[in-house]
Amino acid sequence: MERSLTTYTWNHTNKPDFILMGLTDSKKIQLVLSVLFFLIYLATVLGNIGMILIIRLDTQLHTPMYFFLTHLSFLDLSYSTAITPKTLESLLTTNKSISYTDCFTQLYIFILLAATECFLLSSMAYDRYIAICNPLQYPVIMSSQCCLALLTGSYVIGAVDSSVTVFGMVNLHFCKSNIIHHFYCDTSPLLSLSFSDTHVVKIIIFIFAGSTILGSLITISVSYVSILSTILKINSTSGKQKAFSTCASHLLGVTVFYSTLIFTYLKPSKSYSLGKDQVASIFYTIVIPMLNPLIYSLRNKEVKSAVVRLVKKRQGSRKIR
Image (tube, rainbow, N blue to C red; front, top):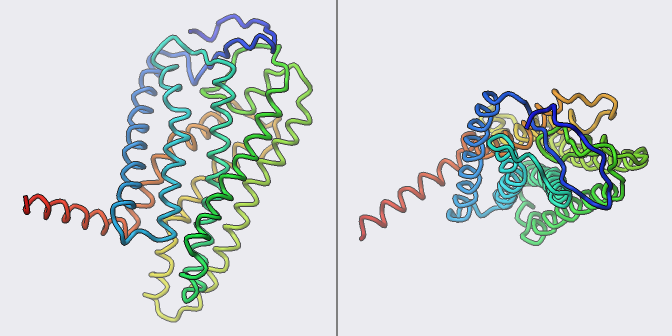
């Protein structure tokens, strides 16, 4: 379906399909992108499921940090799955439509999972803070009840953030056009289609998105300032390296995730740029879910050791047979 497709006016009450215009009109580029996105999605599925299985199967990884990492892999897998398959369908077929209900369901799931991930990353930073700054009390403070409370709180905040945003948007009247100039249903492209006054909704979205991103980022920053202060007080170089290595993977993951998120959402709506925002969106919806398993495994000796133990265990069970 070409970009020259004639737009038509439509009524909110009828709730017809939206049209996702995607990333490009060029068939060749669409084919290249579809292959690239499929390979990335395949790596995302295998990497995150593999990470979950390794943590579940190796008892030495049954610690608070890896409890959170299991759920991080689940979140990455889930919100990539909420977007990538539909993107692939749009690239490979002429079917670029998405129903009104499916569009807002996709938006709800994405915001829910992305907001939850923000506070899950905060929980992981807090875990590292306790492990390095208060190691003697670590088993007591980071109990299973505490971990479950932090996880539940992350999902609750994500659900509130998503509900407020989506319920505010579904009450708008979309009478301008049904053409979404994006590859998935996101807030800015949808708001641009509304005939209603979106000023109040935009302020609410900015407040909730800003509170989610900045609130979790402040928690992470405070945790790492305390961690850095503690590490600098360690006399031995090897001690400093060991302490820093325990949080290096998480710090890298946080940097990659928040840099794209802040670029996309914490800026005035007038500065919305279709090309730049689509690139940023591709990065945090499709690429980052693939990168996280690599960041937390390739840079993590404990995960590497767990893989070796599982392989040896499997080889040993085969010899017994």
